[in-house]
Structure formats: structure tokens, C-alpha cells
Image 1: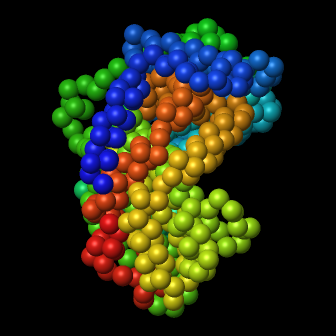
Image 2 (image 1 turned 180 degrees about the horizontal axis):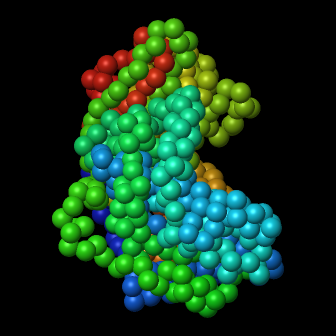
Image 3 (image 1 turned 45 degrees about the vertical axis):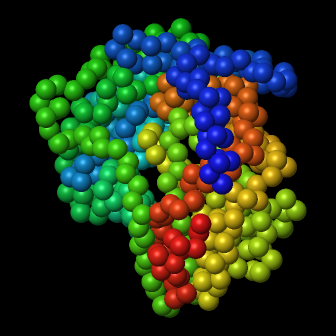
Length: 473
């Protein structure tokens, strides 16, 4: 294995040595005209570091505009963990110019839609409106982001709302298990913290804590104003400059010395956490290995590997092109479902499998999974890789269907890559991958590597950490 994989890794590096931050590569293959003729993304960077990026889509009468912020739960501290998500709730509760009722009526009268979400690395606020209402949408976005009242009475009312949301999240076995997975895999870093934060933080976060979060994270270089659809780039730049031109560019000396910002690196730790409920007849198991960052040489090989391993759900019709792992699980009825996930972050990632299994089949499933992972690199063929490439490209194209999805792609790519890659460039990178590259990625992730695991439910048959570790390579 070593003689095959190490040269492959160096070849892969040479092929991908064009930086993700460089000018887009020229597509070397014949692609459909709709890929090569896709609208260009216009990007303007202000002296403050604020970036504005947009894509005008011909024929569109609506637009999505939003603010993507390079800040999420991983950059919070143990003291203020949950602040970003709390602010997401408070943004719609009124500003210095608009009450909550006025905000709701204004959006409704435009026929628009205003939304927000928080992840471990990003906070996003966006609006979907008609073309003529783009200036009003930008005014609203700036108002809720920069001028929120953060009324103490509203904060206290919202605590109960977030606590109820936490209860709903905890009732979802998949979300609960994946939160536990992050907590154990990244126990010593910010990535291990949940997005909602611990219950004690939700109960005690103050107006001052939320204001401090805005002051330390809403900086011009960390923000991207993105737009897609019926958007004029020059107009969007003017609006961004008018509403966001006064943003701070860096922390002051006092803030730099404070503990308000967590900037630690994601450190993967081999570990597991188990919540055994003997009365449960089902188990939810998430088994993961350290994956890749967005800009790693292994990012695209692991995307292909994820599609190659695929998923299986007993409730759905079987697929003839299932991976050997999914075929074995289906043939022996070892799980109700099993799926592959590949989560990228700025400096690390998680690659793994999530399964829902009857408690009396847990041991048999883990035997099947570890055996397949141990043999995976030996079974990958060019035909498997070609099928996975097609599936990956189809998923990516479907993910660009609609103004909002395009806007999301622009904002995310500007924060993760520093630029926007065209579909043609992405397809070129995918097509360059060979079976040797995917074998190298599988070897890198699974061979003699520690894993992290979170399991919830009936776990009587779940093998020990050491058993899984020794049987998966």
C-alpha cells in the first residue's frame, strides 16, 4: 500500500498546487455550454476589507441579498457560547428604527422573506425580495445587524424560546448524536461547542455579552455582502458602502487582550461518548475520522469518496450501484439506514458514517462497517469513481438551483476560499481525480487512525473503542 499511495499523494499535490486563492483555472475538458457560459461573479473588495460579491442572473425578477459573517459557535468562548445563535433570535425583535411589528409588516408588504442561520463557522442573514426592493432589503439587513435594540425584557423572553428549541433539538436523535460527536472529537477546541450553547449560558447571557459579541466579530474583513438574481453589482456596492462602510476593520488593543474571542485550531481527538438507554430498541451511532479542511488537497477526493460510499435506507428501493458497504448492510438487514457524511471546516473536518440500527444488530453492523473500511482502499475501481463523480456533479448543480442557493454558494465560497469557483472549474477538479487519488484519500482517513464516535440508545452490543480501532484497518 505504501509504495502505491505515497507517490499518488505527491501527484495529487502537484495537480492541485494551483491555490484556491488564485485565479480560476481554465477548464481543460469539454463541458456543456450552460457550465462554460455561467454568469461571472463580480467581486469588489473595499479598503476596509469588506467584500461585495454578486451574480446577475438573466431573466430573474427576484433577488437574494445577504450578509455572510466569518463567525460562529467555534469562535465563542465557554462564557459566551450560544451568543451568535441568541443574536439570530434577537435580530428580528426590533431595532432603533423599527419595532418587531413594523419589521414584520414591511417584509410582508414587499412580498419578501427574511431569514438567518448560525453554524459552527458562519453566521448568515439574508432576504429574498423583488428586484425593486433590493435597496430596502439592504436597509433592513443593516438595521437588524447593526442597530438591534437588544432590549433586556425581549432577551429574557427569548431565553424560554431558545430553551424550548433546545428541547426539540434534543428530541432529534441525529442532531443530538452529531452534537455529541463534535463534543468528543473536538473536546479541547471551539469546534466541540454546540451552536445553541449550554443551558446555563442561555439562562445567563446578558445584553452586554451580546453587544460584546457584535463588537468583536462583526468586523469588515470578516463580512461578505452577497447577492444573486436581479442584482446590479454597482448598486449593491453603493448600498454596501452606505450601510456597512463604517464597520471596524480590527479589534482594539483592549479587545485583543480580552478573552472574548476564541481563535484556537480544531484539534481532533480519538475518543467516544456513549449514552446507553437499556429500554431503547434502536441505536443511533456516528463513527467519524478526521477529514479535510475546505482547501486541503484531499477535499475533492473525500467528496468523491463520500458519494462512492453512498447511503442506504431500508424504507427506500434498493439501488443497483450501491457501494459494497451499503450492499452488505442491505443484504444482511443490519441497519434501518446508514449514510456517509463529509463535513469540512477551515482547518480540519469530519468524515464518517451515521447509522440507525436495531439494538440487537449493533455488533453485527459494527463488524460489517469496520471490515469494509479496512478493505475499502483495495476495492475502489475506476468504474466506482466515475459513478461517484457523476453523482457529485449532479448534487453540486442541483445545489445551485435558484437565486438563494447561488447567493449561499457565493457567500460560503468567499469566506472559505477567498473567491468564487465556477462550475466549470469545480468540474475540472473533480474530473482530474483518479481511482488512485481516492484510494490515497481512503488510506489517509482510515488506515491506522484514531476515530471519534458518539452513540445514543440501546448499545448493549456496541464493541469497545479499542476493538473498533484495531478492526478498522
